[in-house]
Image (cartoon, rainbow, N blue to C red):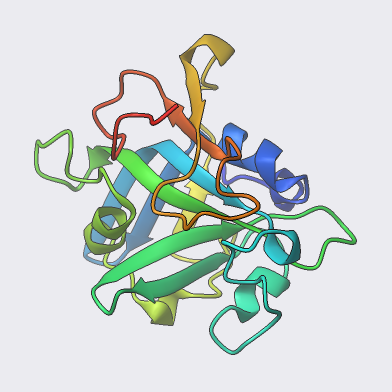
Length: 189
């Protein structure tokens, strides 16, 4: 499985989000090998999206979202869960990212199909912390690799989960693999 090239992430965020379905998240370092197939994501469009961490501009916490595409942005949610985003944006766009919401365990996990069915479970399962924020997903122990393309008929779309009502809250910016046990919640639309 080849590591996804930088050009994969240098496209509109919604395209990257859809195309992340079926890709393989890998953490490979001494004593730790884990891999999972991405089956659910949500797109966050940066400065144009009030639900995005980048909406109010750059901070020390969200700096990776304003950096080069193909890097990890990991944040602590509610003081409990580490959640991972993949920085994605075309040239000329200041910020954007895709939240990894659900995955199917492949290597290094117990035989439990729902072990990674949620962004916090992905963070815990891959041992992520904010120290992993900013990692280059092309040249670190944490990578995203190619996998079989998910066909259009397998892709579901809905509104994002847990977003306050607002200008972008009803947009279908959540993508998931229909029928996968790794999807965090049933679709709302």
